Image 1 (cartoon, rainbow, N blue to C red):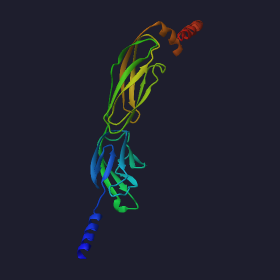
Image 2 (cartoon, rainbow, N blue to C red):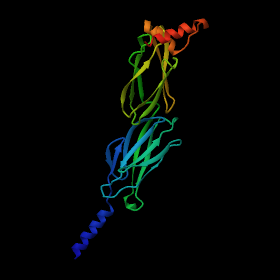
Image 3 (tube, rainbow, N blue to C red):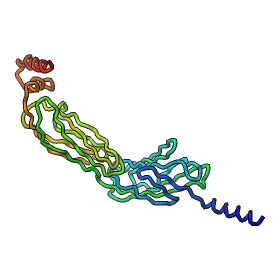
Image 4 (tube, rainbow, N blue to C red):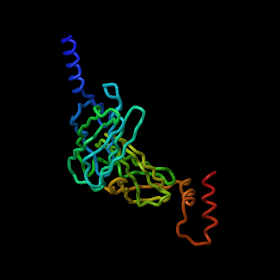
Length: 259
């Protein structure tokens, strides 16, 4: 009888000290114990840190909520629940200090207080983690035919980033482009410019962040050669300065280019 009571006592003692492993899915795939620490990596100002944790613990019960504590001033957080995960979305301030921040995450189940656990995640905040370049900024083109500039973007952040590309060209030459680049992703984007006049065209592209306002200007040049179809089609894009008496001939030339 004494041995049975001893076994039960030992079992209860072990059960009271049991903890559930915390399974983190994003931005890294790993497991932590209660009070564990992890470094998520690098993030840029204005980005959103996405931390995804599995609901199911290895003790057979589910965590119901994920809380976030210890955010710097200007940072915000919200939580999202799916069938199998709890997600913390942490918005880094666009003017955040370049620093390393430690954030506390609390997993809880109000029905089972003993299941509540926490972990600490650190993140390195940077001004920018985008490496942006053009394959070539000087292109030979033909009047009325698209010219393609190739933009390469490397994102060294654990968060996705949104950038906008604009130029000083008329909108009917280049209307701009919005690009989302994923975490730790490299992508090549085709920027199509349609020349509507021939000769040398010097302009620039501006690539800027929609999240923190960081921008880079790239001087560019088009050397546009004329051709018959392009010269006829150019009037359809807009009206240059000419004598009003030439308007009928100008419109007829434009219409002929489509036949």
